[in-house]
Structure formats: C-alpha cells, structure tokens
Image (tube, rainbow, N blue to C red; front, side):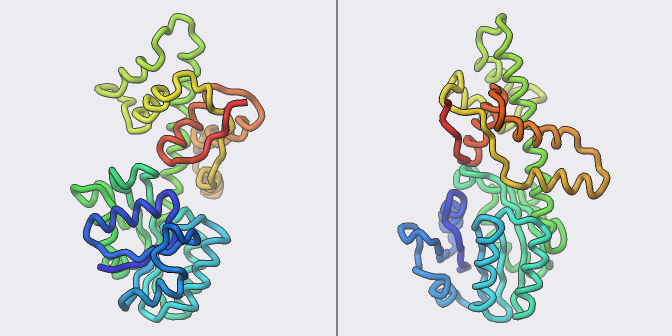
Length: 294
C-alpha cells in the first residue's frame, strides 16, 4: 500500500519510518524540506496512486484547518483523508462535511504512543465509516504494536469517535500522572525515606500500580534524581480541558481528571515538586518541552 503523510514532526516522522519498516510505501510532506519527500502537498497528491489515502499529522486547530482546505482543492472524489492529530471531535465532523462536498472521504484516528511509538507501536482509536476504516487497515496494522489487533486498535464508531476516545484517554492520563506526581512529592518530603528512586523502581513489577508511566517516572529520576533541571510549569495541550468540558456537558462527575487539570493551572503560579514530576513524565512519553529550572 502507498499512502501520503502530511506532518513529519515528533510523531509523524517516526510513523513514516514504522510504516516503511512494515513494507508500506509512504510519501511524506512537511514544511521542513530536510525531512520531506516532496516539496508541496500538490506534489504529494500527484505521487499517490488513486484512490488516494492521505494521513494528516499536524497540530490541531488552524493548521489542520488549512491542510484540510488545501486537500479539498487538490484531492479527487473517492480519496480518503485521515486526521491522526489531536483535533477536537467536533472539528472532525466539520472537516468531514467540507470534504464530502467534493466526494472525498474522511476518518479520524486518535494516536497514542508519543516518541516511543517507532519502537513500541501506537495505540489507535479510529472513527468513521466501516468501509473507510477497512481501506486504511494496512496502515493501522503497520502502526500498531504486533499481536492481537484488538489489543491496540479499535474502530470506536462514527466520525469523531476516535478523537473523542483519545480525548478521554488523555484525560485519564492527566489523572494518572497527577497521582504518581503527588506520591512522589509526599515521599520526597519525608525524612525517613532514604531511597526515593528505589521505592518507585520496586513498584515496577508485582504491584497494582505498575504501568508504563511508572517505568518512565523511574527513568526520569535516573536521568535527574532530584528533578533539579526541570521547572514545575506544566502546559496542557487541550484534551484535558475538553474532557472536563464534556464531563460538565453530560453531567458526569470527573473529579480526579478535573483536579489534575487545575493542578496544571496552579503549576504556573507556585513551586511544586509534584508538578516537576508531571513535567518530567510529559517529556518522557511525548517529548513535550520542559522549562529549565529557575
């Protein structure tokens, strides 16, 4: 299978490589000519066999809007666009309607795996028509981890469902990171604890709190035992806010996720060892930038 990939940043670059290793042909475009295979979206479209499949992996919002608009003008009826970025699910429905006016199909896909996806594979949550999902299945199978498909890929539902599931996934992620971080701060504050990194390391096997995030927490402490090089300012990329907004809209109590989001807001005002750990974890799994310690 031959498909196009627009956006070769931290995740898109690795996704292209993983797909190629799986035997797929990928033509990639990025505004950075050093990583792009073609010089423009027009050249990318010309390079693809019909019906074309184009995976969009750019930041949500105005940039995604601009790419979808350009694809509306350059693709043909029967082609398929997949938004694999972190767009809000309501935007998926708008983009699908815009493309449908030209006979172009649309699907959305929540992608989890961060900078480790090349090595480990990506967890994928797709939304769209069954026929479009089936068309793109070779791509999904190339990107996900090896093994049973249902363990790392799901066709969640209609258009927008994939990004809705990814939004909730990231809301849960907020709560998990906050819990680990608060535990870190509590342990760090107690004078009878003499091996803080070792405590977390001992939780990695056999305990009910073991997880990949815990593994990354240990890795962060190995690299910077006191987190002295990281500021406690923690950004939020949108999905946490959207999750809380959806909880309010549907009268669903989500106190842990909401508190984790508010803790990030608070991190921008006060010094907090816990928020240093949240910042360190975001850097470990997603390559998100940290601020140097003040």
